[in-house]
Amino acid sequence: MFTDPIADFLTRIRNANRAGHRVVDIPASNTKREITKILFDQGYILSYKFEETNNNQGNIKIALKYDKFTKEPVIKKIQRISTPGLRKYSNSDSLPRILNGLGISIVSTSHGVMTGKQATKQNIGGELICYVY
Image 1 (cartoon, rainbow, N blue to C red):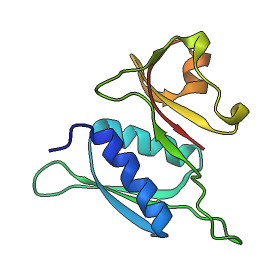
Image 2: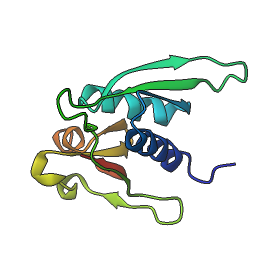
Image 3: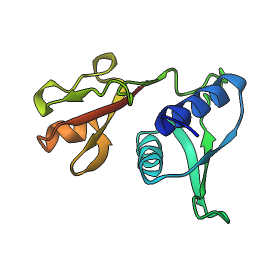
């Protein structure tokens, strides 16, 4: 039993990146699916596939992205911000810029999971899930 499934999701991606794996399997949830879509849209992962399993939970297969020449992972750091023990919330005008705009923050809002830039444009705040750069 995981106390923080989002942290487990991020840790599996981080560990697979460091080990040089091409694909990582992660148990699915709706929030994890939305975070995966954001990572794909922002260019941090190569592709993803949602698979159904016998227990109706499903799996997410994520193909990790590496630089063609240096073979370095595209995701340099993926860091959990808000935890079950200490929730971090932010207003739309105080959402952080990551690496002066080169990274992204993923925010859970009342309108769904989105990047910090999208939340600022829509003028809504929420819970800071993680930073990716």
